[in-house]
Amino acid sequence: MSDTRLERMRARMQAALQPQELTLEDDSALHAGHAGAASGGGHYNVRIVSLQFEGLKLVTRHRLVYDSVHDMMHKEIHALAITALAPSEV
Image (cartoon, rainbow, N blue to C red):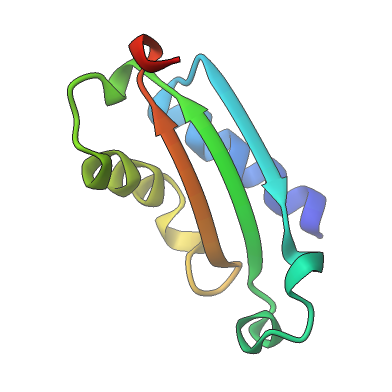
């Protein structure tokens, strides 16, 4: 199930943000026993480089990432750590 979840997350981020780089990791095992983990929602870490982030503030970049997986938030995704960079920052 987790692999399918990662694949869906990846596909949605790819479609919405056309990233030049996308690394998505499932860190759920590190949070076993955490109250949020009980809901079945996973903990994920994403590093994404996209032209769409050029000139945008960090909070706006994060909002774009969250928007790409909005329907998965709070049910399938409990926590999402985001590193969002423009190509000029890499």
